[in-house]
Structure formats: structure tokens, C-alpha cells
Length: 290
Image 1 (cartoon, rainbow, N blue to C red):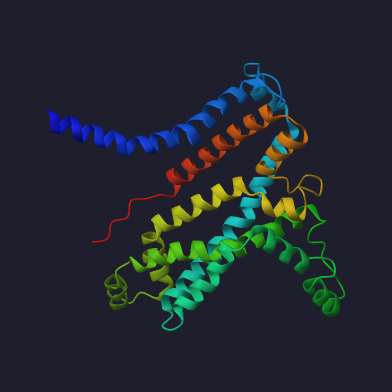
Image 2 (image 1 turned 45 degrees about the horizontal axis):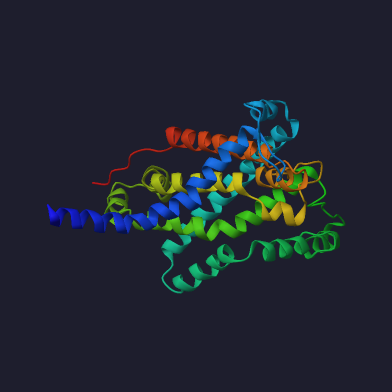
């Protein structure tokens, strides 16, 4: 019994560090979040309990639903662009024989780069006097309002975020390609399957776990985007690039209403979680390689 007690004490001693960390950095913020969501507080004084008033306010908040539509708009641009670019990158990387490590690291530089730095870079590239508009003006006599047109502004931000994450998502898909046995493709070739048939009937189905992972990461990113719209458009024009994170920031620190900002965060998390569950139910399949 003394040995068991010593082992139990040792186990609790090792686990206690993590439990203490969880209680301080996860437990306390979670409890404080619940308090704020059901109260009214302005950074000073004590929170005043208001029940579900903050949640009822969301259903009447036109800006919140404008932000929701903005996020769906961003997803409609970002998901196709980043998925197609990532899978092309993964296929190209899978077929490369030389300089594979150099190419991989080159693409990952974008992923680890500062959001502020590359936002400034793209702001200059897409500006009215930037290289893209100068080329368009010299070649066709036109310029494109990348950041002042409501629809183009969100498309431009989606292009920027795609540039940043294509290497990271591409490596996830590349690892999925590496896991597919080459014998399956060889058997398909013996049966006369074309490259297109192999891609649709073998590669994509067996890539399902990697594809689902990329889609979930992309959706989570879309609900948490902040730096790019904050640095370039500030949520404009006409609130068409206002994101959930930017709206929370403005509500908490500009309108001095952290209680309502917390409620927005909870609703955003619930919407995000619902979309992730929907993706898993519709797209995710059990893949077995025999």
C-alpha cells in the first residue's frame, strides 16, 4: 500500500503542474467569460447581471449579421482558392525529384511571416499606384479599386491569406499523398485508367482525411481573421470587410463594451463549431487502404 501511495503522490505531483496551468490560463478565463456574457460591465466597477439580454441583442444587431455575411463571402473566395492552390502544390511537390526541401521551405516562409509585414507588402502591391494597377493601366488603360470596392476588398484579402497558407495546407495534402500506396496506382494503370480517372477515383477519395483537415483549418481561420482587414481596410468599405475578431475588438476597446464583445465571441464560436460539424458530417468518410 505504501508503494501505491508513493506512486499516486508522484502521479498527482506531475499532473498538478498541468492542472494549475489549466486552472489559471483556461479555467479562470472561461468562468470570467461566462460572467461577462450574462452581465453588463465597462472595465470599471462590478459586473451587473442582465441575464440573456446580451444574447437577445445579437439577434437585433444588424452589424453582427453583416459580419456573418462577410465571413461567408470570405469563405466563398478563400476555400476554393486555397484548396485548389494547395492540392496543385502538393501534387507538384509529390512529383519533384530535386530541390524538394528548398521549395517546401520557400513556401513555408510565407506561413511564418509576420501578418503585419505581408499586409503592408500586399497593400502596396494592390494600391492605386502599385505595380498591378500600373501594369493594367499601361496595358489596358484601366485600374482596379482593389481596396475601395466592397466586393473586391474581400477578394483581395482572401488572395493575401491564400498566399500565406497555401504552403502549410499543401504540406498537409502532400503528407496524405505520401500515405497512398503506389501499388494502387500501378494496378489502376494496368486496368487502363487515365490520369484523370486515377485522380478522381483514387487520389481524392484516399485524401479525404487530409482534405477534411484542410477544410476545418480554413474555416477556423476564416472566423479568426484579424490582422489583414485591420491593417488594410479597418473593416471598410461600408463594413464589407469587417470580421468577427475585428468586430469584437472594436466593441470591447472602442465602444467600451467587453460584455457584449464576449457574447459575440461565444456566438461566433458556436457558428464556427456548427459549420465544422456540418463539414465532418457531409464530407468526412472512413478511408481504409488494403
